[in-house]
Length: 180
Ligand code: HEM
Image (cartoon, rainbow, N blue to C red; front, side, top):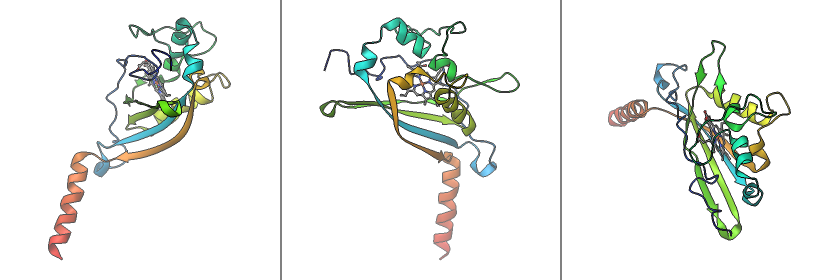
């Protein structure tokens, strides 16, 4: 394995500032208020191919500079960057963020390098929209070039109830148990 091939974050990018706080599900009734959807996808990367891509081109694909993580304006580029495809704006012009907590992993013996994408949002449609923009492309066909280097293998969506909801469920179960 070449030097520098196992990054802290597998793509060797710093964590960006865009970790939104809008992650509590609040549209599905008070009982589930403050819970969050959690979307997890396992990606495997072709790091040999990625490491051959010159840094300016990598930055174009991601939409941020590599060393200092400065956002790049890709309005004039032929293809939208990962960053731009991940920007979701609603009908009123409001931009919506998700909370991301990606987890890089590796099995060097098997030459397996990957990332678990882990995204939290109270609005599942937002992550679905991001995925649609990345996979179908905007315009359709102009998919995110990140996908030329990373392949999704598994994916799952959870709903994580809030701590008060879980406590309430435990208390209700304990009460029931005590009464029997
Ligand atoms: C192999 C999987 C992925 C890799 C390696 C990856 C990598 C990156 C990198 C390097 C950045 C820029 C640095 C940062 O802001 O943290 C970024 C930003 C981002 N990614 Fe991903 N990403 C992956 C999958 C996804 C998926 C599946 C989604 C959404 C469904 C997503 C949503 C975002 C968002 C919202 C941003 C912030 C964009 C902004 O700058 O406003 N990413 N990602």
